[in-house]
Length: 592
Image (cartoon, rainbow, N blue to C red; front, side, top):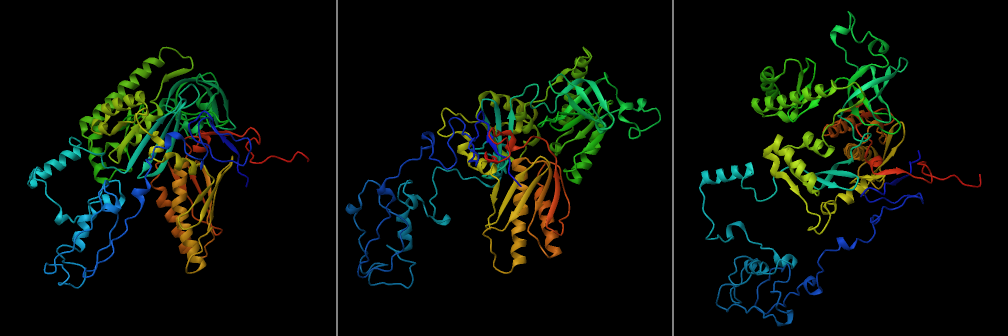
């Protein structure tokens, strides 16, 4: 299989990777991976030879007990090594002196472990081990100025810090979101610890890009019964596609038959005006996908206009689902359906009702706009992708959202204050002009992004993955590489495949790969091993919010799976087809 050769978009801030094709060029101002860092990143202080030279231990004297090892140079920074006075030996009659020798190295008065430990903590903070205070908790000094609190006061202080009123450091959470705004796109990286798990590129919204979620007045251009779809003019250059399964009909229009019995030419006709919503952006030569089942998502609920739908997120626990089911009747509108989202866990009925009321007012404004004209046009624009990502994902699991653009920071903070004010203090502004490093370099996003664009991924045990993308599907090949194992071949292959299953799930989420995916695991003879690898893959994919479907592993070690394609993918969003080889990955010899 031949890899498609691409060149990274020079308009993007993303550094390009090395390519075999001579036409691949580096974006302006970006150094290639592995090159010397720029002057902006050379802000690490230079450590002198004096501070890095390890301290020479003093020669033992006659009568001394066995000295404890010294971690580093314990002298003050302003005293040269040759001028440092050696600690005098204890008198012969004193505890720890020459005439009182104890077994082991503990319990000495003037010397020994406590003396060495106390001396080793007196260095300056910039001298490595000499700057650390190695004091046991029981021996730590108590500051006289520190107030002593009883148990109730301590509990109240702890609860106050949890609420964020007295938080001195960043809130505790599993994820951190870094948002960087470039000239023509907004880049969003989600970190779990220090590992990047998701990367989203939100290009500048226009009439053709990033239109998913928008609501249009459309006009049916032509109906194709053989394909069971219709092309709809929604006011953009390329017609959108409306499939038969996405057409919504009222009960009065069915005339005794169900919608599954009707053909598409009986459901819609050319020239008809419809209200539709974009569910998928245009990808490549395919137009945007539409649906007539319009929905308006809010923070805690999703409004389904002109429907009787009632639903609760399956991710909520059973007890919470029962609680929300009791209050749905009080908040559900008469003419519309409602779906309770995962974010509604623990939300009071008043807050849920307020969110539903806001969505109903928004739909009333859309209907008023639709009634003005039947011309194909945009009647409702969804939030920017950066704000939408926060609407979908921001919760208590995020310890912070760092944004390096002032305008976007103000917009995001105002939105969070309106819908979830208790999380507003987790929105932070990163001032590029005053910070020494760019945001993505500060949190090592650039380094991980380079690896995410490579076709080869290394496993911890020495194996590797080869990820190849084609027009029809994505293929992942699993190799043992340098993993030679320790017991037998079957066990080595099994352990390697388990590592590969975990890494494949992470790479699919990070690279945002959708469509049909085939994973070529190394052949395993034991059926139990094959089932364990398939189970490990499903378990790893359960952390992905995008819908996936995994089939059992075959006798050849192949796993077929699908992942819903929402966006164009990470590689396509930051690259363009090579102008020399036209994406083939090679150039045909001119002599043929």
